[in-house]
Length: 294
Image (cartoon, rainbow, N blue to C red; front, side):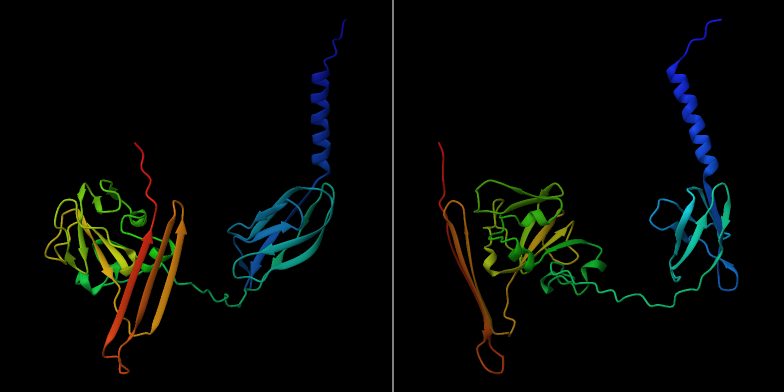
């Protein structure tokens, strides 16, 4: 009788034997976790510290960790609303180690949660839209590009990146930076300034310089409920800067490619001590090299 030796079969049998012997040498840890009054503690994380062995307690408060190598471990319990607890435990070969726990509920208060105000968010529209309601409560879709957004994005004119802050708005490019023609919801939207329609032709209006703009409001859909003239697709309303009664001044300088230089000035204050006469002065000057190719 001829016996054929197959190394693969021998290795497979040897591997199964090793795994079987290893499984017989491992131990198990189980137990019950309860709260005060012997109430079962559900969804409590039970783990052997520094290892991969862990389990979550059931509805009845029981846990079971199988296939644990023999040794001494630190068992850790954690859960929401309970005081964390640690204890030593010894796992023996081929034995079940039972460890029950009684937890006390934590009475500690949560740390104070501070929500920082979004400096780019503007909650209320301008009075020029004839509304006194916060934007969140208005049934109309209104998006406001705040003055802080215009400042931080260094936007210099109406055609210079304003609509990237507004979903669904597209600018038609015809005459460079001369006109602002914006379409939204299938057609050109009307251009307003402080609540008045300033569109005189299809190409208009002339693009506004951001040096005198406080913020811009985009109204999507029919605006007849707030303004007498408009367009079914919507409008944008440029709100200009107004005196605030606070004496302050700001000068900004920008520089960029193609010999781009820009200086803008914003002065705000009172003309008399009682604050009955106020002023706001805005000015800007831009120099830029325009390249052309044939």
